[in-house]
Length: 141
Length: 407
Ligand code: FES
Image: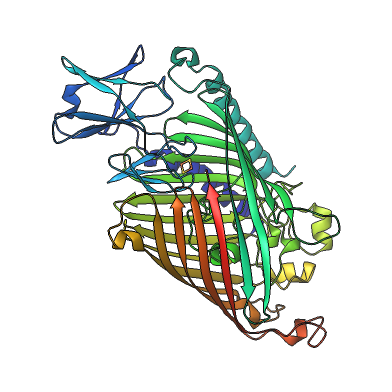
């Protein structure tokens, strides 16, 4: 391959990657991700968000980390801060827990450590239900 | 300046203008008291040391392999600094081999949102498993897998910019892409592949660049990853390149690395496999210029299985005892150009088995045995043959006992 031709194709590949990667994330809001406004130090999630699913990932533009909010089988709601307890990297939801790509820590669905280097479980945030909203207290330790 | 290079620098500058504008206009004041305070600094670290006994030569060494100090600083919710200072082999003394004091990483991180960020500086691209996840409590054995040392030259960090993200649409999918400085082919060595050509942020030639990208998918107990690297390896001026009969350009004399890995983890056991291939189509030109006996193709791979014995015996608690075994095959002269010289010493297999005991979370004590087999060394390439030098054993065993920590 000619050098000029290669450089051209490398630039195309680079640009292609830059354009394609964000699309893996999709354009619209995925079903599990909901945007919530911050009210004081509380995130408010409508109960209707759980009409067809048993968990949502709550995101607020004002906050650094998402919150995983799950409806337990007893009807209670459990909120986990999606921040790795090793070095505060965001964790990613998987089909049965969470993973942190920074150094490979894994957590189960309840936020308990499965694989080090993280040694502490994910932080659970207090929740209350008031009328038709679940309120999550967002205060980092 | 080369027009392609100009274009790339323009894209980098535009990207940073966009990100820093975003950083300055963030609604930081709204979250005061709700997130970690701006200006907070975090310190942590990891390290490992070992005693090694060579069963053939009957010699032992005790070494403080490495101690790494992590310092992170959060400027605001969008911008933070990550740094790691590493001291290898306990000390550095002038005129003596061994010992290294280096920056393992130092980069600024710009959060785009809760699941995407950019890095700029000296960072470790996502290639293989160990390159990113190399804390001693996370891999089996005193030594990191040899494939991820000799083929993927971990810990491999270069200067550049990176983009990292996780998909919120496809649960468990994450991706990364990076533009970094390329390797320095003048330092390639036959017995260590491309390893010595890493530049590690020390006056790196930056007129040769590399692009790298990865996809990692986590589903259930399975993690599967693929990554690729394509980078120029001669950052020379036109005049220098012409005099060495080499090409000069951003991606000239490319090194191409592709890799795939799979990990399956259950509380009781873990299975892991990885394969990596390096191709250097212009290796002949490199040999003509630098006489490094560079191969045009190298590969390596391993398979590892581990079992958590305490879990098997229904022991509950934070202690863990793992038994593991790993088999590796590496060929650093899988294909040679016409001017390459075959050296079968570069065809290696390793078998490693051992125990890992975790007395507390974050601490591991390791004991393992390594059996290394290689092909016959090429006598034409030996400068000081036996009896001036010690005899070379194609088959040798090593016993290692050591410990590691991470906090
Ligand atoms: S920050 Fe999550 S594993 Fe290190």
